[in-house]
Image 1: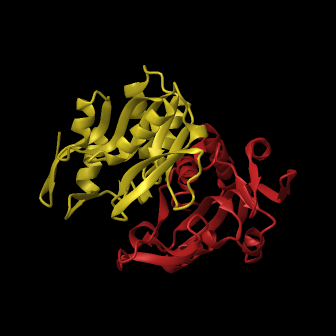
Image 2: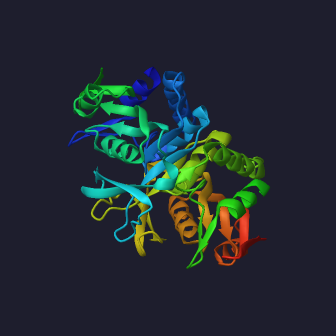
Length: 189
Length: 189
């Protein structure tokens, strides 16, 4: 998506540790209308498919999921970080890694809000090593739901999350794929 | 808002400790189109005002803020929970309380994303004792921004957060005010 690549080039900052900071429009301050245009692109790509539900990760994916779900006119669910001792038997549990907190955590979703036979579209702001997407896939599999596709605003193409998911047969759709980045600049795929 | 009251009556569950669980449409599974209708009501109530920015709290308010910001055609910012040792000098810091984690935490917002002179509309899913709203007010004051109004989907009228904010002169707009609730039923204001 041209507009996204231009904004990343203009506003993104590359920090040590392969961090791409885009908090001026994507994940701290959010450009609400641009978020909706990104969701429209996802809808355009998957509109021929049956999509019953959007799934995302708290909190990074909520804005995109809200907009995407509006385009598809379906509900969405966001997975929650489990609080120790707060996991009932009414949830599916998987494991993911939080970069913010630097540790693994338990990702849960209520059994009431993902169902056998549903076709679920996974969305998030970033796709890097793919751990959050893998955890959502795991949750869908536990529920007997089918993953219809995997969407991210920004894929870090120099990490292997997206490649491996494609090799496993998933339809992965990223609005911008960063192939290389350094303080000198950013190259897209 | 009639539709919200009806959904709370139909789908809400009252749990011990004054907890109103509405995770079928508001804060785990989300009815995206209904969320947008709630945001439209907020826009209708404040459309005569100058609103430069929406502010909300991660993660509970992001969906509502996304929709509200689209109606006003302004950016929004969500406050973040500070990670220990991760607070730079480029943020405003306030203090709030997390019911999920049962403890105080530091709520931060980048100085880049709230500015002196801006009129900011605060939104969140719930207004109960008002601590999260007070923390956002504090952040706006630190920035020299003005709070144009305070909006919640559901206000717990039997707690005093909303009343005190109104007494302090803030314009508080809640889409549904729960006056009493028990396992027997819910009474709205």
